[in-house]
Length: 443
Image (cartoon, rainbow, N blue to C red):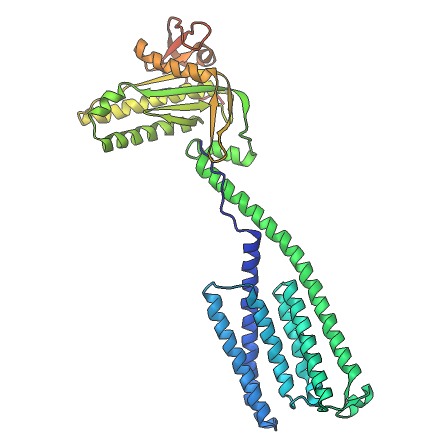
C-alpha cells in the first residue's frame, strides 16, 4: 500500500503574512473612514475656520488620505501585498498628522497646542494593531523625531516664544517642559503598545503552531484514509486511524490468500486490449468488495491475480474463518460472472484460490519516497504455491491443514494427499473447500 509522505501545509511565515495582510486591510478601512470624516467636518465647520489656507489644507489632507486608501485597496485586492506596505502606510500616517500640525498656524504656538497632536497616538496604536514590533517602533520613533524637529525649527527660527510651564497655559508662549512631557508620553505609549504587540505575538505564535499541527494531522488523516481505503475495508481504516495502530515492522499470525484466473493468458489473446482492461477492472472490483466484506487487506495485484491478507494490520481473532468465507464469496462472484457470460455467449472463467496461515513479518516496506504495507515470510510463499496446486488437483479453493483445523467446524471439505511444496520442509496436506455449512460468522 503506497502511503504518500508529503503534505502541502501553510508555513508559519505564510500564516503570519495572511494575518498581517488582514490587519493592513482593517487599518486601511479605519484610515479611509478618518479621511471621509475629515472631509465632512471641514465642510460643515468651514464657516468657523477663519484661515482659508487652513480649510484648503484640511481638504487636501483628507482627500489625499482617501485617495491613498483607495489605491491601497486596489493593491491589496490583487493579492500583491508586501511587508514594506506597513512601513509605507505608517510613514504616510505620521507625515499626514505632521502636515496638519505644520499647517495649523504655519508652525506657530498653535502648532504645539493643537489637539490634533493626539493623532500621533492614533497612528502608533494603528501600527501596533498590525502586530508588528518593528512597525510599532518605527511609528513611535518617527512621530517623536518629526515632532521634535518641528519644535526645534520653530524655536530656532523665532516663530514661537519659549516660556515657563505656567506661562504656556496663560499665554501664547510654548514651554520646553510641556514639549518634553508630550514626547515622554509618546514614548511611554509606544512602549506600552510594543509590549502589547509582543504579548499578542507570543500568543499568536502558539495559536499558529497549534493550527499548523492540527492542519497537518487533518491532512495526514485524510490522505491516509484515502490511501488505506483502496486496500482496506472502511471499518478497518477507521480502527487504524482512531486507535493509532502503528504500521511498523512486527511479527504476527495472519492468513494469506492468493487468487488467480486460470488460463487467462490464452483468454486475453482473444480479446482487445480495452476489453482486457475493462474485464480485469470489473473482476477486481467485485473480488475486492468480497475481501473488504470479510475485513481482509488487499496486499497487491499480481497480473490477473491478487494477494489478500487477513489478520494484518489488525486481527479479529477469526482471520482463518474470514479468509475462507471470503474465498467462498469469491467463488459465488465467479458463478455470477459466468452466468452473465453465458447469456452473452462468452467464454467462462475459472479461478484458483490458495489459503495458508502462519507467522509473517508485517509493516511498511520500501523507500522514503514510496512505502508499501505488506507481509513477507514463508507462509506467503506457501500460500502462493497452494494456489498453483489448484490446477494440478482440478480444484478452485485449497486451504492448508493449519488453516483447516481452525475452520473445519464451518465447512464441508475434502482432504487431499500430502504434496511436497517448494519452500516447505515436509509435504503439506491440503483440503478442498466445497461449501460453508455454518453461515453465522464467529465474532
